[in-house]
Image (cartoon, rainbow, N blue to C red):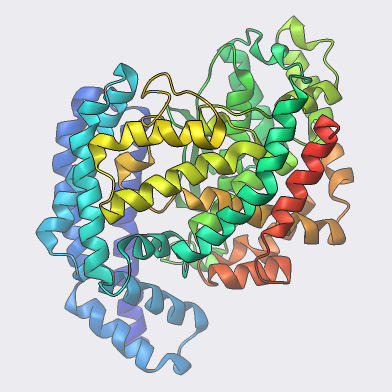
Length: 498
């Protein structure tokens, strides 16, 4: 058994090295690669994908995993969980013919490049054939993995174990019932919040300095976390030793970057605080996309948009920012960054309306994967739902169906993670407030105890524990979406005096 475990661990290190290489290439393609480099990158992806496929499905690895799982009571818990994760990945991967696996990696690269061009030029027709290819692959792969389930349920399970359309339908129905009346009340109340100072010119060089300061306040270790600039912000983790966040800067929309940094910083804190004993293993990452989003949106919205936090960072913002901010109080800032109104762009949406953006994408994904909505009809369907759910007219595809990068990477089933993550974070706050003087700490800019609390209950475990186990550990109860509804009702009743 000792020899089996030794060989198994060596194989894991080799797989980790390939994943590291993939991650670096992907990060470089988004941040530094010239447009003309995409063809060569696609060729490299094809070669590396084939090698990774062979590593993941090798007979030797199968034999080692089988032996470990057959004697799991004789091995340590980490090795057992690694074998369980690898067994699941192997089963999923080997059900896809290698030539299709490789072709899919190449198709993803081509789709990503087409999306970037299509978004800038407002040309959905350019992206459509690539999207159709990825939809077809996703539907086909779901059938390979579990033909007894609806394809979209299979894809949802990839991002959140056990998640189904039935669960999400119930969750979103609750949000529509409880939050739509609040949205309508806010709209009826009228524009009582002045956020004009958020559009004052804020030089990009100064915004970069603000990003550095925000990362410092968040306790992000800059020896292990860098920041880059992209069109659509994201976080990449190679291990807890190397995490990369990204943001975008707009001279007259500094809050966009500010909250992008805080959001991605939340993802980074999760990865940076994973236990050392699992950092280079298949367990050395977030447990699920919803758990990950619970952290990014916890810091972005619950902490970052609180009056206590804004009162602490406002002197730094005034020091770096335009004169228009000199007379702005923390309370004015709080009202401005929590202003709620139906809008076009998901990443710029306020907390109250945000989940409606996710509902729209969820409804469209269900139809795309089920085959009841053709890709060519997607823009019209998108625009119709934006009018129905949020009452807004979509002027073009750049601000509509092309605004997100997720579908260009084949990430169908990902979007619901944002809404679930927001709800998880609100439930975690409820327990955290019992254990810590949260708002006193935030007012002093002392986030270390908050990070330590989350590390103890969430971060350190990586994938050792499953999402439902982490929710129980963090919240001391199963998931309860009413915590999220209560949190939003209380917050926006205060902001708008409802």
